[in-house]
Length: 70
Image 1 (cartoon, rainbow, N blue to C red):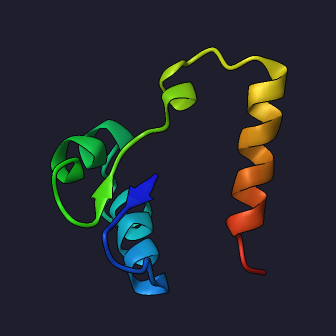
Image 2: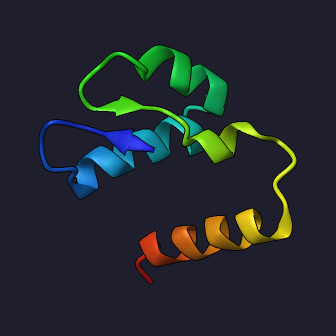
């Protein structure tokens, strides 16, 4: 989850995506390095549970699909 005092732009989103896909940073590394910056990267409480139940997983997928621009 990206949190900021400013508007989150595509550039901000792409920056964090590139950390994961292009720079091969793990999610825990990104969280650790950007948890106190602005914008900051953090996890939602339910994402901290590695064993999501079906309802949580369905909500996570729906939220993710809603953010993808095709």
